[in-house]
Image (cartoon, rainbow, N blue to C red):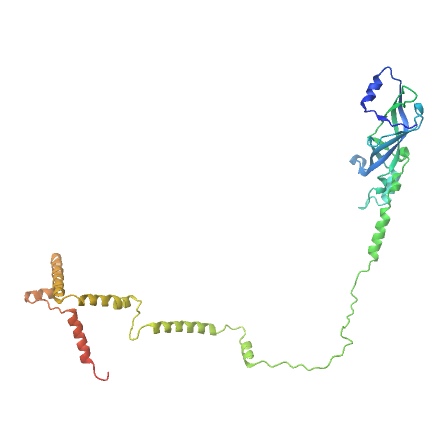
Length: 346
């Protein structure tokens, strides 16, 4: 008979064990074969105290317990319900012969790894299990079985205890490395033969005489002057300065020997004509009286300082007034002199 067991961690386990009226049978350390659906197999190493000896870590789900002896009430198998399967961790140790086999298969190569064929299958492993069997109340009811797998998360397996020589399941990576190395060595390496093949050896070409064209004279002159500084740069700059100076001279009015924008030009063209125009509109009596008052003021200022004009002093003693002509008279006299000096045909 097969019956689904309960784990020893179930709350009913302690209640039934302490119940005095229940018909309970306890079986300890029963040899069994457990079915484990393997989920992961990892290659690990011990510490430095064991020279980093490799081993395997097996991890999977416990799906069924098969006791080596018949249990009470005809129980022959105990499969777990889907979803309630406990986790099993075990560690597989290689012996010296297996380690030598792994080395021969390329253990120290970079490609060495656990084969994928070890994962996803059901492994049958040995184990010791404690049972607690509760008798049914009637013949129609099944018994209740509690199980506790010893070393469920720390079992250590070997080839002798498990019956598996796991080194045999590893592929031979050394042979693959040798094949690859030989394939690389057999690959031809391109080398240069040293022979030169003429691409136009079979081609026939017409004989054409090539004559180099003669260079013009100006090209020969230019080539002879190569490396010298061009002489036209300085001449061009001097010509531009001279042209600018001629433009400025032509801009001046004819018969004028000064710059109209200079201070001299401003004095002659703007200030003097304005003064003459102001003086021409003033009556002669007012102009003479203004000049007399200005002269008297100058004399009084000079007498206050003790300085006198000797020329003016002599004139005063003679009793004659200073002879001053009006601006108009001077201008008229100058024009008359110019007319007298003018000769016909000039």
